[in-house]
Picture 1 (cartoon, each protein chain N blue to C red):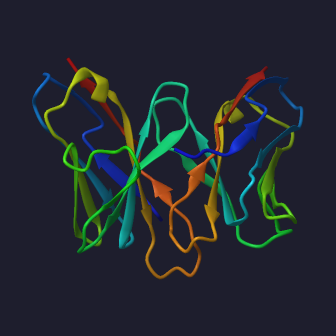
Picture 2: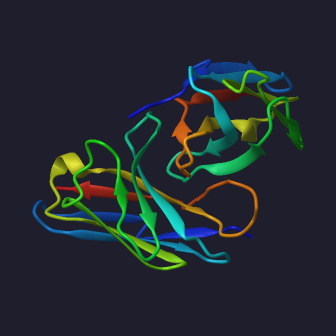
Picture 3: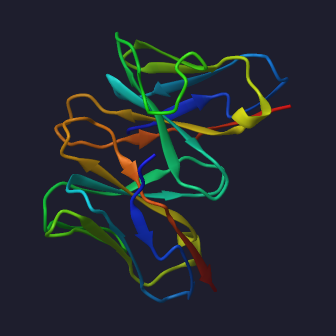
Length: 112
Length: 117
């Protein structure tokens, strides 16, 4: 199936550092969702974006809907050990369906 | 709010048997639910879209006779893996699209780990 390009694939950071990850696509999307998945669990919704240029925060997390509508970014400020997990972006195309395409995931590991 | 449950959370079965997985939206209604499959260290792959009161829509390459989907009510969808084989072993996750919120999103269940011996 189709997937979005998500980078970086994985990253190790020190506690307290800021983290940035992004998703890019060749297709235009009208909705972007960001999820976090812990091992053996289902993804948990972090942030939803609905308009190009939209910038939305959820605590230490901030996500942006790219102006071109082909990308999105997620930033985590002042990371803590519980931020460890896999982060997925998901994009919904303009095709009129409710289906989402998922990114390849960014595996985050935080060193205390 | 927006809680989705799955049952069972884990199942081990013998090859050739069928396994049913339930997905329920606990505090909202969902005309549309989705079934995903996830292999270790990989992303989620959409298998099918489950529509309340109508037939499911399957993604390319997913056998509809192998993975039977029933969306009997606005809060329940079931996935039945028929005649399961070891290659069907995977993590199956459902999601539900809330009805009437005005905002497009999906909420995921906790997943069901299937092991076929």
